[in-house]
Length: 114
Image (cartoon, helix red, strand yellow):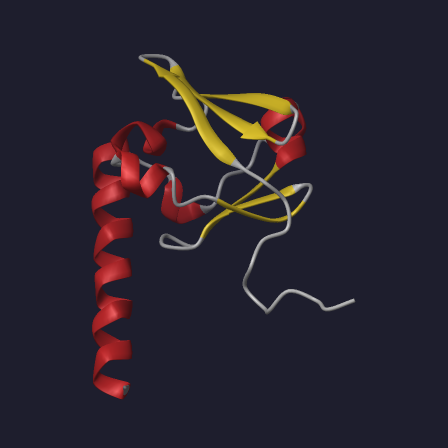
């Protein structure tokens, strides 16, 4: 049996229906709702950015473009996870602008090295 190459996900994830209140992530047979009240920065993502989600393990969701990681348990039980990463605090428009700036700076650094 051959293993998949590094970086490829073996756990399916996709973005489902969206509403003004949030969006669904489809994790195989499961459906999780991410509310914009709890995860406000996602409201400011483009559809391409939002669908850039990866699922490296069954309980781990990742948006590599912005270095955002979420545990599935944190979505299902937010009361257990009151703390937020500092760079995701503040007005959602400012947070996403900062994330895009970080992403673009990292891309420019990689281009200079390469």
